[in-house]
Each structure stands twice: as C-alpha cells, then as structure tokens.
Image (tube, one colour):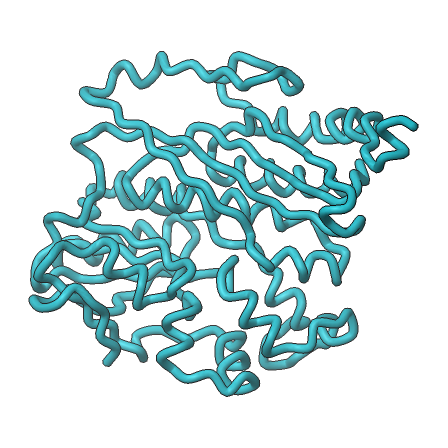
Length: 341
C-alpha cells in the first residue's frame, strides 16, 4: 500500500505546480520576494511606508455552487476569475488596493491539466486586479469529494491609508447612488439558479436569442472585477462616500451595509436595463420581484454613494474605465433599509 493507491497522487501535484507556474509568474508585482513552491509567499511592505497610517484589508470568499456549471460544461478557465473577484471587490469597497491573493482548490482527484486551467483563471483575475498570486494550495480529497469535482476559494490582502477608508459614515440625505453594471449573475444565487434551469449539458448549450448566447455561457460569465473602475473614479477627484458590493443578499442586504444609522436608500427600478438572464430567471422560476432583488445583483455589481456635485465626473470615470454606470437612486433620511420605487 502507498499514498497513490490510497487515492492521493503526489506526482500529479508536482505536475500541477509545474503547469501553473507560467500563469502565476504573469501576476508578479515588484514587491513579491519569493517564487512559487515555497512554504509561504513573501511580500515587501516597503512601498506603503509613504502612507500616513496604512491599514491592511482582507477578504475571503469562494464561487459557491457556480462550480457545478463548470463541471457540466467542462469549462474551467474562468471560474478562477470569479474566486478573485469575490475577494478583491470586497477589498476595494473599503477603498483599498489589492496587493496579493492566495487560492485553495480542493478536489476529489488531481488532474494536473484541469488544475492548471483553473489557476490560469485565477491568474487572469489577479492581473485584472493588479495583485500578485503569491501562493495557494491544491488538496486532493479522495473519498470526500467525487473524482471529477472540486471547490475553489481564496483570500486577498490589500492596503489603504486610513484617511482614504470608505466607511459610509458621511453619507447624507440627498447623496446620489450610482450603480456599476455587472456581467450577469456573478457568483451568488446559483443554488436557486440550479433549481430553476435544467442543469444538463444539452440545456446549458442551448442558444437563446434573448440572451444572445447559450444559457451556460450567460450563467458562467465571470464576475466583474471593479478594482480599476474604483481607481478611475478616485483619480477623477470623486470622494466615494460609501461602496457596496452586490453579492449574496442582493440589494436588500448589501446596500444597507454601507449606510450609516438614520439613512436609507431609494432605488429606482427603471433607471437601467435589467439584463435578460434575470428576466428569464424570474419568468421560468416564477420568482417574485422581492426575492429577485434579495438574491441576485439584478445587473448592478457595485453601488457607490457620491455627492450630487460629483455625479457627472463619476459617470465619466466609469465610462473611461470601460464600464457602464447609472444613477439608480439616492440616499434618504429614514430607516437603514432599501426601498424600490
């Protein structure tokens, strides 16, 4: 008896690392002091010495059951972008710059080419975030997970000068809420998605004119990463008073997280076009409007609060970053909750 016969292939692990090295190297920043394969990743903090009061930020998350679609479609090159996005988007909500990322892949069996493809997506997400992939772990779990399945998670560390922290404390009645478009469902609500649609290869590969693509491609579209967009807004001279990443819990749970006591949010439903995938979900699943807005991002991946005077330059900065922005509502005096109107 040996480890391989017990279900863990050490040689496959070595091969996975060799295959992924080229992708990891493409994410390196000057601050990275170690190569892949060590016991830890070293990252110099020399550059943050110029900050008055540097504050470290962290975020951790995974892709949820969205990975089930990757299994069915045998498409694993973008799910890593989702893992990075879910973490770095939380970091930038506080005004931070993501510095580095680490991933964790648990699998039933280590197929080196598949693992390398997953990490290729992680590296792409890191490049979009301008952060370094400094390490990770691939854990083979025979008997715990099916051979062809895996789970993917990770965490990001960022930094911000304390004076630039986005806390929401200064949001006031009359401030404007700007929504930045999502790429689709992102990485939340897939347990409901999988209950609405038939999760077969045939169903996911079916083309729909209303979507302009197949169902599977629409659902598997990687989560938007908003790092460069938030940086563009800041560089335009806008003070972002509050920022909310619209993840699990949709509008109702996430927008109040950026609001101070005594301030609520009014969202105008027809202020932007809701992507067709959400309309299909609502119709095919007979899902109420309240549940849709309480589960999905409904086409808005990030909401920021700004002063009225900053609206035009904020929208211009979003456009300059290659994204779409909309005035979707305003902050109002009242309970710390969301009202759709």
